[in-house]
Image (cartoon, rainbow, N blue to C red; front, side, top):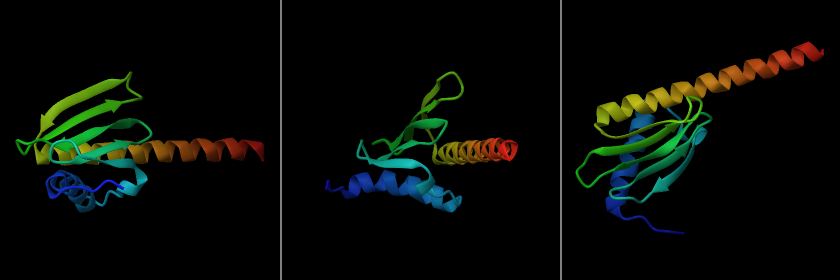
Length: 113
């Protein structure tokens, strides 16, 4: 198992703290720790995937692809406040996808009865 330095813990822990602060369970996302620069995560939800890490300049870099929107990408340096808004929006999109999928499944099985 790869060990992580305190330096790469900083960015990773910062992202996890933002998720926890906003009651976002990152276990609902497919996540992997990223050791790039000061640390971060790679993640995947049903309609968004990407990587976010803290740069040496103490600014987060977000490289995100919105899958259901004709593969639109977002690559930018972002402040902590902007990163928080991005993570909240990604979670909202994930929840909406789960809700819509649940409704489709319920309707499908309802029709079979």
